[in-house]
Image (tube, rainbow, N blue to C red):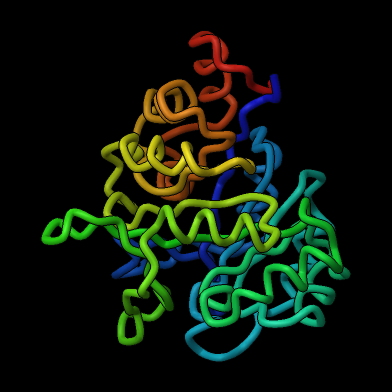
Length: 257
């Protein structure tokens, strides 16, 4: 059995790491490179960096900090933010990233997923999906441009349909960002994860809701995700990654110590 992954997420805006609640009201957490180094030293399995306003601003992630991160960590990392072409992705990978992740650009141009997978291999291509539960309709809907409050909008895609579509087009991994749970630390949405897991045949990373160590164990054991992504609990040092791994091992979760 493959070891489950613990993935700290660093949302980047204007060159600094920020964190919001339900994708709103972002506060500055600190500088990118020291945080990345800390998480690598604590035992993170990989890191994800989202330049959260790149797509809505119509620009590509700033590559200067990608190179600096690559110099100080020895674990895989994934970068997302406004990647709209093979050229954009190529530059980020050349600067040292191991994977690229696309979200809003994939919704605007689904063929991009296939172009990137054909060029770099599916193992390099992650698709991020921002999924919102609409209580009125009872449906999980995919949202776009979530880094900019003024431009955030629902798409025509329901979450499970889009999960299936991106896999057909060559996504090698899916990060499911559960918007209702983001930053509130009440646990991952296990119902949604199980629903997505049924149609997701590539590695699935849960994102949104981690507040306690048991939430990670639940995601692995009750929803069979391959990795759990979290931000605020690590940024605010509520949970230490080394201690979390020890706890998970005690819960019989296959984990890399």
